[in-house]
Structures are given as C-alpha cells and as structure tokens.
Length: 276
Length: 181
Image 1 (cartoon, rainbow over the protein chains, first blue to last red):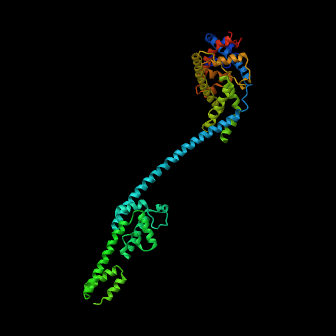
Image 2 (image 1 turned 90 degrees about the vertical axis):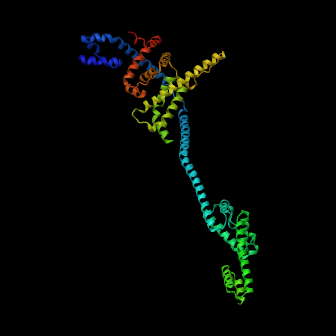
C-alpha cells in the first residue's frame, strides 16, 4: 500500500474511527517508517473508539433481540383508525368553517350592497313619484310618499302582503288611477263628495273605505269636490242669466261650452229647451 | 378515508419498528404506543406533501424523535411538579406502578436495562445518534437525513458520544474484554 493511500486512510480514521480496515493494515504501517510515528500518536484513540463501537454493537444486538419481543397491543390499529377518523372530522369541519367564511363573507357583502342599493332606489323613486304627482297637481308630496310606505291596495280583496310586494311604479299607477276614480265619483255625485263612501259603485266605495283606513286620499277628494261644485254653480248661474235673457248668445255659448266640457247631456238638453 | 388507509398500509411494515425505537427512547410501552399513533396520524395528514427525497422510514423516525423529545420534556416538568407536591405536603405519596400489563410483555436483561439507562442519560443530540446508529443500524447518510445534519457532524458527534459512554460502559461491565486496552 502506497504512502498516499495510507495517509488517506488515516484521515478517514480520524473522521470515523469505526471504518473497516484492510486485513494487512497493521503490517503495512509497520513497514512504512515514515507513517509509523504518526500512527502511534493516533492509534490509542482510534483503537478505543473502535472498541467502544464493538461493545455497543454487541450490547445493542442483545437489547434489540430482547425488545423485539414487545408487540403492539391488539387494539393499536383500530385505535389508530378511530383517531384518524376523529382528526379527519375535526380538520374537515375546520376547513368547512373556513370555506363557509370565504363564501359567507362575499354573500354578506352582496346582501349589504343590495340593501344599500335598494334604499337608494327607494329614495330616488320617492323623489320621482313626488315630482310626478306634483306635476299632475293631484296630491301633496307628503301623501305620495306615505302611499309608497304603506302600499295601500286599490282593491280590498288584494292582500296586504301582495300589495307590499308590488313594485313601486305599479303602486304609483294604482294611486293615480284610484285618485282618478275618486275624481270621477266626485263629478258624478257632487252633493256627496265630502265623503269617499259616496263614490257610487260598491267597489269604488270599498276602495274609498280602504283609502280612508290608510289615511290617504281624503285631501285629494276634498280638493277635487269644490271644483265640481264651482262648475255646477257656474252652470246654474249661467242658466239663470240665460232664462232672463234667452237671446244672449254669449251666455248661451259659454254655457254650452261648460256643459260639453262636463259631458252633461241633461244640461245640454235643458239648454236646447230654452229658445232664444 | 382511503388516503389515510393507504398510508397506514404503506407504513405498516414500520409500525412495530417505530414502536421498538420509541420504547427504547421512552422505556414505557403505553407512551411508546401513543407516540407512534401520534406520529402516524401526523404523517398521514402530511403525506401528500411528502417529497420522497428520504425514505418513508427515515421521515417517520424524524417525526418520532421530535415527539419523543416533546414527551420527555413534558415528563420532566411533571416530575418537577410531583416532587414539589411531595415537598409541600410533607407526606409520602404512594405512586402507582406506571407500567401497564401491556408494558410487561417483554423482559430486559440487566445488561440491556443498564445500556438503556446509559443511553437515556446522554444529552439530546447524542442520544438519538446512538440509537439510530446502534439500535436502528442506519447508515451515516440516513442518520444525516433523518436529523437534518451533515454526515461529518454525525461522525464527530458519534465519536463524542462514544467517549461519553466509555466510563459508563466500564462501570456497568459492558464490553468487557473489548474496552480494555
């Protein structure tokens, strides 16, 4: 064995004294005078390490054979599977919780956003309705907003729930049509326009009663009724003047115009009977 | 459940081996079983992320050693507390035999028992090295992977561990005829 090879072996022994050595290692060292001194300085430590290593190998071999007798308890694997199932369930529920959180948060955000949007739309609709009604000059703005809030049904047979579910434009249309009906009722029966129940037909009466329950339309009816009265008074006044002066074409023309505007057939017939 | 069962089937050949290592470490069969179960459960949960760079056994051993360390630290704390309780009460407390029937299903010779005591008394970095080298008979490279240290560190620490054990072995009469110079 060359000196370089022996030197390399020395280095390996210093790092790990337990490595396998060639059978002729010692004789090789004996023959190599250059390395013999160095070997003599490290040999005791290496030899001690090798002896301890051998003792440990032997002792652990005995220990191993003794300890191998110990077996896992019969219920080991069933307990292990139960634990695995329990841990899987707990980890599954926590993952479900986190998933629910990730899904729930956006849904909650959407719901809140929708609610906010709805409030905004309600406000805008409220303003639009107010403006429209103000333009129509049918009823005060305060009343129109209360219509939207209370969602009064036009017909008594429609349930409150249904009326609440109605979209806003429909409600607006219904309130307008209801007021028109009230106007027509007021025109047809001017002497009874102080009360909505005097509207004429049964359905109209019920609608007017319902309107009263909702604290609605009373100002509207009251505001329309004097107009019809005024018209009738004006007609009667003109008839009286025409009777006094049947040749007055101006009065006749004015009366005819009023009666035609009111679609008053009886009045027109009465006018025709007054000969100039 | 099939993934976990697959893992248990795959690791089944090592269950008893892990148990013996844990038993060597903890010297209590019940604790050793509990630790092995915990190790297998933990490993089954993380098996999908296991990158088979090291063998499954060395991976399991690494987890096992960590668990054993944790348990031993907990034991030390318990022991300190129980000693404090005895001192405070000033009375003798009868302590139940910690060995269950299951733990008695093996018998150790006096030599083996002393060897375990000696290895158990070694400081942490050396104890697992000795067990992995002499009980598990792992190669240096596998020990290095298991403990996440270099092979050079494994060799130098083992040299030091052998030095630490020498006097204890001589006192215990272990390796007679081998240790004498």
